[in-house]
Amino acid sequence: MMANAATLVGYAAGTLTTIAFLPQVLHVWQRKRADDLHLGTLLIFTVGIVLWLAYGLWLRLLPVILPNAVTLALQCAILYLKLRYRGRD
Image (tube, rainbow, N blue to C red; front, top):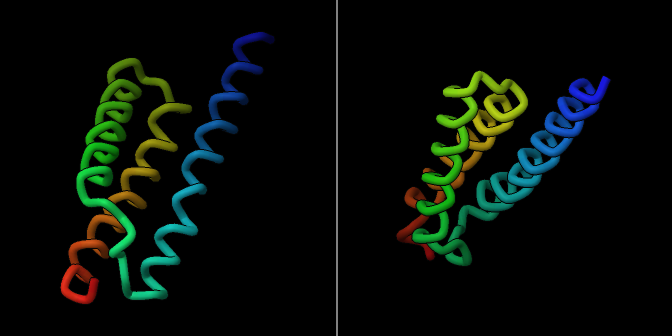
């Protein structure tokens, strides 16, 4: 029973921390500006996500793998938009 509760907490945490990036992606995409986002911070955070994803894959922990895979996709979108709109900043 405890493992099931822990798994649910893991999925809930992963879901919330992942969807937290969706408004940022939409905001940058709609404004066509990303001047308020620091590239260094984005890159460091992306490396952290990749490491969490590798950790989850290594240990086969689906509650770690799924949210970090989605977060990585959203973070890549933010990085792409940051670089795409760089000249407009």
